Length: 229
Image 1 (spheres, one colour):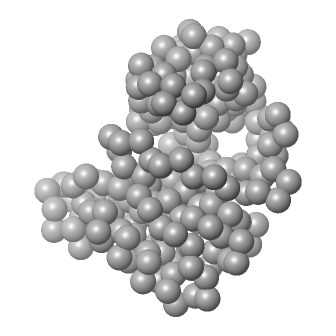
Image 2 (tube, rainbow, N blue to C red):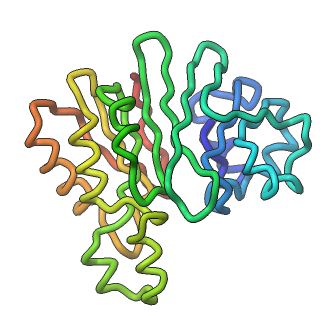
Image 3 (cartoon, rainbow, N blue to C red):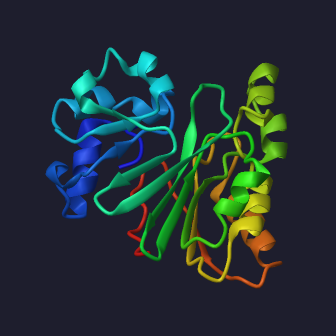
C-alpha cells in the first residue's frame, strides 16, 4: 500500500472489494507526511502488524502516531516480498518527499505525485515502464483565474508545488515506451482541473509519440479500476 490518506473504514472496504485483507499487506510505503497522505495512518497502525516504510526525515512528523517497532526506515532501495522498490526524490513543500519505482522481474510501475518538477536525471531511470501513476493536479489557466489567493496559486505553480496537466504530459512524453500499457492521472484538483482537460492534454501529447498506452483518471471518491500489469 502506498500512503494512507483515507479513513481506516474506507481502506478496509476497498481491500474487501478486491478480496484482500489487512493480513495480506506486506508493507506500507509513505511518500511524505502531508495530512492527505497520512490522515488514516494512526488508526490503521492499530490494526496491523505490517511494517510502515518511511524515510528517516519523516519520523519527527509521525513519532506521535507510530511506535518505533512499526517503522522500517529506507533511503533509496527496499525489497518487500519479491518487489524491488526504488525511491526517488520529489520536490514538495515538506521534506523528505519521494516517488517510487516498483519492479518485479519484468513488471514495473512508477508512482509519483505531489511534486513541482522531476529532475531530468531521474527520468532516464523511469523510462519505458509498464504503468505510470502520475499527478496531473491542475490546469494553469483555471488555477490563475480561480478563487485561490495569490500566495497559494504561487505555491502550487512553484518548484515545490504540484504538476500541472502540461507538465505531467511533458514528462510522460519523455518516459513512456513500447512496454508502457497504462497511464493513470492522479491528484486532480476539484477546483482547478477537470477530468476532460487532463485527459485531453496528456492524450494529445502522447499522440506525438509512437506509443499508445491507455490513459485513465484516478478519482478522489471512487475506486479506480483494477489494472493488471
